Image 1 (spheres, rainbow, N blue to C red):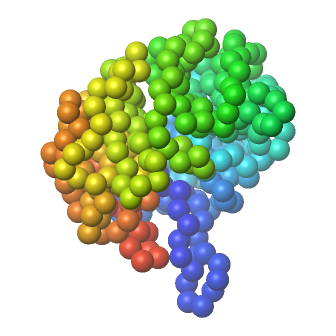
Image 2: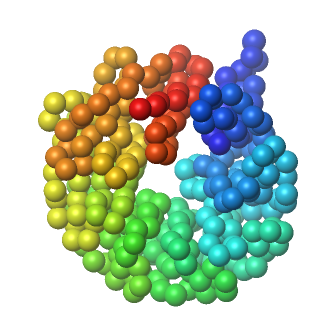
Length: 319
């Protein structure tokens, strides 16, 4: 499932379609589409249900795109998907500066938890909890919080002193950008465990790819090309930066057990497979256009959305 904005048809200045496309992962054939208001977020798929948020949060049938229920939540943020924990769907309700918990079966509101004074930036989930964050303002601190998905109560709240990214949840840590530092917080207590200063632009935070062993992100200090940085997920110690032989474009990251996947700054556009032990590019795949999303990986197949001129397309990569 891919959120898209298709280019206008004919002389129209309006897009021909905005919403969600469901594609067969093997063939790329469209199975169904569902239109909804922008800004739209990445969908969350749980079993046979797809949860997606525009001005309204929808639960859709994965098989045909029909609506199970809808909830007028207010806009979320592009790239911040609804999260699912133990039968509860949590979403950002930006107008009320709150995180709202909905019954995943019915869409009924179970709780609404307001955060600090600023609007929520991101929301994520672990196996048992919901995590959300707000940035600091000129006169008030922001916060990273853990919320009980059943009651909506805070389990801990940690102060944030700068702008922030959407949190990424690991086995024992919660990771996010705080200003120009990549910071890890303890999941159980909310205490800061480590912080690593990494050169990056102030207006955008690099993606974070994660498993129990490594935390991988970009360094982008405004030069022509970016660098991939690998950190020990537990301690924050740097393991390598690279690659030394290829130029990387700032963009989405993905990883599996052996490789990191990132866009290469080449013509034609390519996705590179980077060895997780040393940061070297070991394989490449040519793309028909500029990659708009990271590569979504399963055992033998990768899917990436690209754009050539003004036309988006879906590229299927195989072994």
